[in-house]
Length: 287
Ligand code: C2E
Ligand code: MG
Ligand code: MG
Ligand code: MG
Image 1 (cartoon, protein in one colour):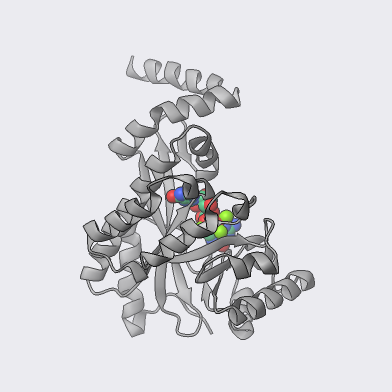
Image 2 (cartoon, rainbow, N blue to C red):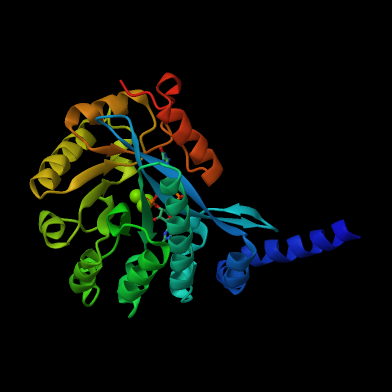
């Protein structure tokens, strides 16, 4: 009987799913419950310093284990959260969890920082800066260990007060990163005008870097420009050794990708951190 009921519910979800709009609505109707009940959780992907092979950071990536349809990726619910005014709740949940976990890791002796994704829409939230400052204070985390990654897709500069809000975020001590760099409207001017510490080159330019001449030219130019502007450069989407070696040779600062580690639950990250702290058991081999 239980199984029959589950099957009925699944069919309902499935029918809704074939109507994108109502599926999104039903997802959003469940979001607060999903946050409270632990269906929504945070995975972490290590960020590795190319020069020393150390894990210097972790990116918080939200996950949703939906009981009816299984795991959902952020691409399946972030946009809906933005349209249905749920993105703030989701963002503050991820931030809170990320700071909790960072404080725990640091207390255990692991020196690293955390990166949290910030939808450009969040720059329009009135109390964003206050909420970020409040979370930092509540967790007793050093603001300099926290990076907020803002996706450049669309027109960041078109958001009213965008630069002022970013400057006020910087004033709290957090670092800002321009995520998915190269996919949006980014220009030289754009990179220079937006306050940021880090530029994260989109994985579409990175994954085939070892065999795509055009991408090599673009990545080289971005590195040169970003470094001249005093920005640190992160490459996302590193999937093979060749690309990793090439990035190191090009002077890229930090790498992230499936080659090094997929996004994983906190306990798995702790194992990875402990392994890479033991010199005879290094897992993240970069030559
Ligand atoms: P992103 O911030 O650019 O994150 C990188 C995405 O690339 C992640 O996908 C990650 O799992 C994936 N990735 C990492 N390494 C590799 C690789 O080597 N190869 C390939 N093919 N992919 C790789 P994910 O977790 O599905 O997240 C997708 C996007 O959803 C993120 O892109 C970010 O924009 C957004 N997102 C995730 N979590 C949050 C969140 O808490 N808040 C907001 N606003 N957006 C989030
Ligand atoms: Mg990101
Ligand atoms: Mg990205
Ligand atoms: Mg992305």
